[in-house]
Image 1 (tube, protein in one colour):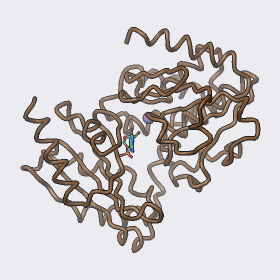
Image 2 (cartoon, rainbow, N blue to C red; image 1 turned 180 degrees about the horizontal axis):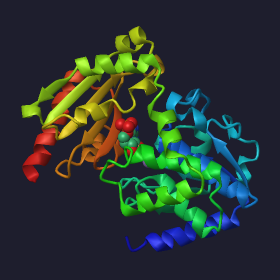
Image 3 (tube, rainbow, N blue to C red; image 1 turned 90 degrees about the vertical axis):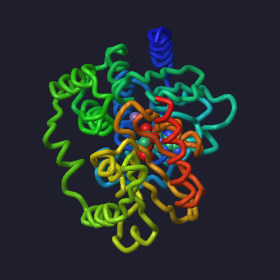
Image 4 (cartoon, rainbow, N blue to C red; image 1 turned 180 degrees about the vertical axis):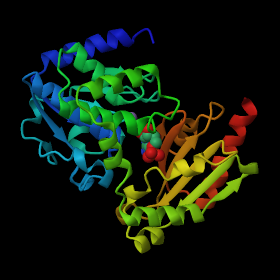
Length: 331
Ligand code: AMP
Ligand code: MN
């Protein structure tokens, strides 16, 4: 990545020069989205700047496991002085993943900080590092460049991004840098056991009931190369689970012996009724699931990607099978 140092320098300059900023991330924010957001906010505040964080009001309450990242500083309406603010997008691969009008207007000055390899580079300045395990890792680097101290609050937020996006240091993006970052964050006050137990334990029972249904729905295709789980609207209603309670469930299909691609299909409700959210996970380098997700209008990483589609379950499954077959044959 020859241009990466230049991109880093340019974004550091932009951040140094900015006074008022608005930080945001993608819709349905996950641990890396919120961790990067809160961490970056802490860094910029420490530097004496005026950063506000924006999330759509629909994102609240935040997912149960991320409840510790609730912050009174997050606003849910466009600030009146938006015209004076530099917009900073974190962990957002394309601008349509933050579907609010006021951030998509012409003329907005955007810093785009992300680690998705298929980032559409929609920023005025872009810092896109697909080699970073998580966007929080890029924020960690920026903090050092900007001379900010890792306070316990900043460290805790960045640690959440790190452990969630690396699947607790299990996925292919788990690098030496990821572990070096973990060490530094622990030195800055993070208590790993406490964070892990807040995120992965004390589960709402509805979440376990939903998992039970998802596991019961398992279908395998093509000799087990594809493992598909499916959650219906009734599964959510009858267990009392919310959409986010399905987070992480796809990993159970990924962990199955013989799986090349794990799929979780969730039927959506409300104003997205009739649509399905599909999560894709690859177990090794043979299949690039982000390519499949892009065919459905989504995107992501080679090993973890997602999309929202109107295709029916059967048609969707057939399309995924065809694409996986094509990619496996090309190896
Ligand atoms: P998920 O399956 O929602 O956990 O998402 C897995 C990965 O795919 C994450 O890195 C997301 O950022 C990315 N992703 C999920 N949905 C979309 C989408 N609609 N468009 C682009 N990227 C997505
Ligand atoms: Mn991320």
